[in-house]
Length: 319
Image (cartoon, rainbow, N blue to C red; front, side):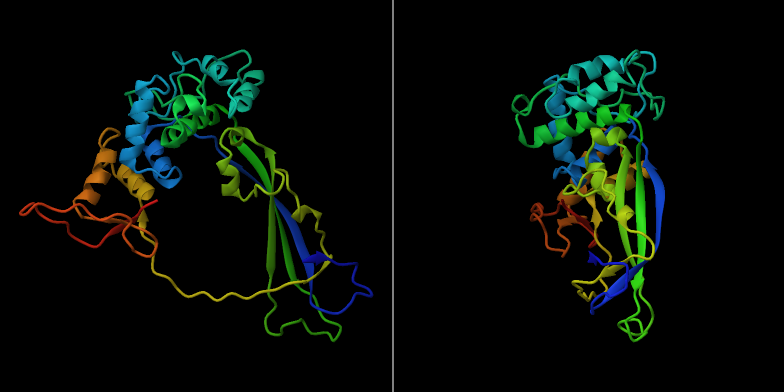
């Protein structure tokens, strides 16, 4: 679409007119301290690792002194014994997330290291945090770096403020042609154009993936306000249009990270056993890891004779 003139003397073709433009203020809460369940969910959903692989990597990072103990249900920092300022100083010079840590030290944690009061104290170990700053080369790259990167960014994000942004929505309708009839005939269609402008980055400075979740494109500036430039009554010439056809599809398979969340909500397993439970139901044939078409991602393990068998056809989607 291209913006046309005021309407008078315009050429032929199809046009849209902006009927309404409005803004909606929205926000996303900063994450709480990182616990095992959220780490497992992130590993399956975004890091390309199974729950068992995530825990194996996390335990190695713990053994190297890079992160704190990775098996915990607690998401609340100790208000008396945890010094957020000291740990932020450790990461302020990091080449990847140092700027986000330094920003918090200049502002929110300039004079105090008291952590946020949000979260839940399960009475076990404290939330998972990065104990010392390390480069990609020091960590070793690969899955170890992906897990360490997520732990560090989640920690800094949990100390930051909420993300605040404005969603600008423009509603457009087909304009009347010179003959007086709306182009295309039939009921008048309504087209919607949205853009998101970040007002306060908050925890997104450390956790940039949340910007994609709210609709901010990495190819455009964070403060993109394309829809805000549209005004009511403005005409836009349609330079290209396409129609797509879709058919109904069966419900998608349950994904690994969704299974972990369900297990947590129904109190099945603990932070120490949950990853093993997921691995066991796959290895024993009760479910299979597959892609969106149902094709297995890896063959099931052969069963010993008389060893029992798996039951139904329930599937979880492997990532």
